[in-house]
Image 1 (cartoon, rainbow over the protein chains, first blue to last red):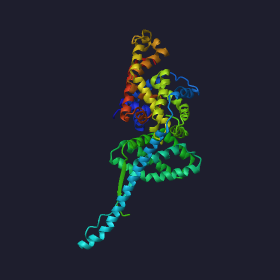
Image 2 (image 1 turned 135 degrees about the vertical axis):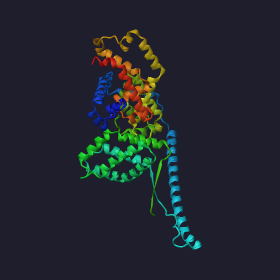
Image 3 (image 1 turned 90 degrees about the vertical axis):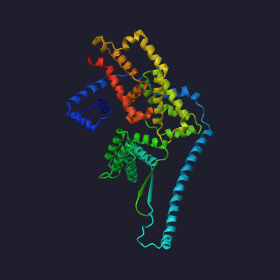
Length: 258
Length: 192
């Protein structure tokens, strides 16, 4: 039997792990080590947090407000220009994709008959390349949409069917894109992204396909689960990483024609 | 980790539009959580107050780079953690520690004395002092990571994001901190 090392015990102390728990149930040696660790960490005392009254924030503001300059309009304009520039790049990229797509279709329509007539090949000649259906999923957009869904789930009223139904619809629409992203993340051997997308998949599935529909109890359970496993934070971190990189475009090809 | 502020985004928009006073609302609603984490990392009330002010100043200066889809509370919390880390990493903090240790009166309570009687060690003030010293003997990064994990209940990913390090580095920092703490506090174990 492979014993748990100290690092694993510490990890288990801070974040309970089912496999470590099972091992501790059967291994007296590791269980004793874990009890000792628990006892040591629980015994550490920290200085009591000094009390800060309700007016503390106002005092902080009073102490710093004089040294803060007013943010001026040109800075806002620069921000606006940056936003505008970003949007124009995105539009240009989209336009380029659309042009490439239509050009490809036109080229194909223009060349198929010509080839047949000029070369006079028999029907058995390999057919012209079948156009592929290209599904482009921008990972950052997917994470963004997922984050918004998680935030809505976190704050939704479990008893309000009006709020729950749109959540279920959004989860259904995100499921397919999430599966594409998962496959791509596995191909790219990105364990952090894969793990997060796997957990998103579970959550979306539970939201979208809950047997018996989404009851207030089911929503509360999902909210508790969301609050305890830091999935929302992970998604935010991943999205900020993706935004820091170049736009991560996942391309997936399906056979068939449009 | 931090509370959500529904009006935070509206306040950020107002500040960027030139309404400086709108920042006051953000300062008022997030000061307490920033003070909490700053005090836990620095272990000093005055330093924690300074960290809170510095974090809000830095936040204001960087507000244009704030990603509007992010949560302001999380963003400013991370800035505060980095300010606190800078504070405990600064040479001034180091020299203060040396000065404190070289103070003979304090040295008596801060250094683990293997010859001390169990009764003496049981005095809670001295135990606290020994624990405080054990914390100070950690590197600033280990101290911050341990505090975030042990007291702030942050996940490895949250610690990594707050300290701008890789998740594995955050995990290792917590691991080393726990090892060192246990080793330094071993004299207390026999008295429990």
